[in-house]
Length: 254
Image 1 (cartoon, helix red, strand yellow):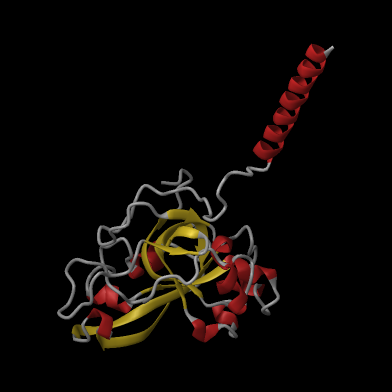
Image 2: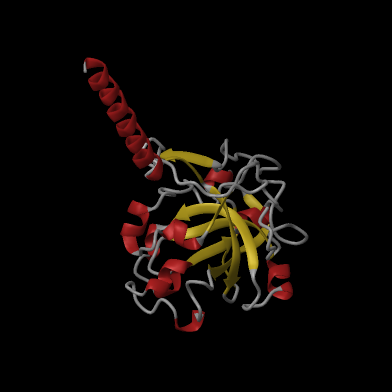
């Protein structure tokens, strides 16, 4: 009789263990959820960017489907790059401050990418503005040898923004989540990291693509707090700045 009871207890223990294993496996109970998981690209298309593992993300992964300061607070990519104009190591101007923008950072979500890739987006019209003849202090503060301008434009995910011209009419409009401001930076042009015959050639972007062309881009995620209430910046501080490379969309993401 005692033997039967003992066997019964063992059977009950095994059944309970199987059920618990099934429940934990289904919910990934023991899997760390502190870091978002995204596909990883094969490297930077711009030789000036020493980041080997860009996360391939969507615009909405950065905005976290929010606008305003709430988007920064909840985003896995907060706070983003510390300086939007910081040059990477290389042929830097005198007085450049080392080490340059980070490829990754650590926040409450774990170790996350600062350098990212966004595939299959469209762009709006390109505007050249904020022209200057000198570098910012972080890049040495010296003359840049000419006058270089930011090439600015919004990119957007057509899956979330089917008609850009009527999108993001207010901060509560969900189409805002699929748009992000982008800039080919004037410092990167002055240092010849971008510009003519580079992976971030603004003139080629304007002549070889249209606002209907699907493109892939790479760049550093940056938060600009000065434009949270304006429609052209999608009621959000998020930017891809600097945008370091673009290409015609490739269906096989690499």
